[in-house]
Amino acid sequence: MRVFLTLWRREMAQYFLSPIAYVTAFFFLVIMGFSFWMLVSVMLQGAAGVTVMEELFGRSIFFWLALLISAPVLSMRLFAEEKRSGTMEALLTAPVSEVAVVLAKYAGALTFFIVMWLPTASYAVILRGFSPQTAPPDLGPMAAGYVGAFLVGAFYLAVGLLCSVLTRNQVIAAISTFALLLVCFLSGFIPYLARVDLVRDVGAYFSSVQHMMDFSRGALDTRPVVLYVTATAWLLFATVKVLESRKWK
Figure 1 (cartoon, rainbow, N blue to C red):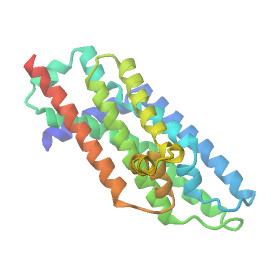
Figure 2: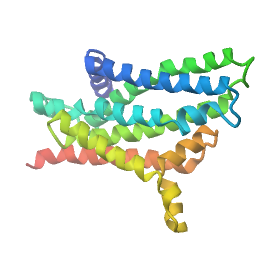
Figure 3: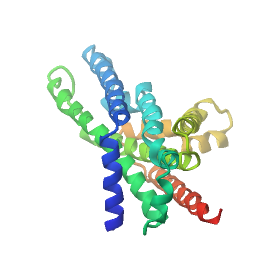
């Protein structure tokens, strides 16, 4: 545990000392803030059937744009930069296991991802101020929406971690991560396009778009939770195995 905490603090220091991390956080908050501003504008116009979380998480393209760009940028340097700078060998020859290295790097990226989300908690306070004109926000769907955003973001960062360990170029890691995440995102529309019931059902089970729509309504189903936790764990396991394979060369 002490080794893990030491490596985790090292990763967090690199994030908070990196200008790219701050630019990513700024971009993320600008996109989410613009989406929130549009939501408030629609609510003030008295649009019927509009709920906070469905617009902010479920239906908003800005939510997905923020995730699809921030996840590759946050994860691209995790292993690629270590390889480029030549510090990977020193890290792996130290008395630490590959599991500790992978988990610490992933925990660092996930922690910074959570920190980026913290300012959005003020949205609930702002929406409370509009309660005389609109219905006060329901904290249940809001909490479920954040759980969904955490699960999807954790999965996306795990994809980026695996892509980063496969290359020494940060740009290649970011582009490959973005391409894979874009495929995952676009495949989420299969339930709306497929005409075969079986394909539609299978697509709905793996659709991140459908999952976020459900989370934004306050429906905290255990099936997508198990799906994202299992997929994230498998990606971390694959990253460990790729890192261990360096010993065989």
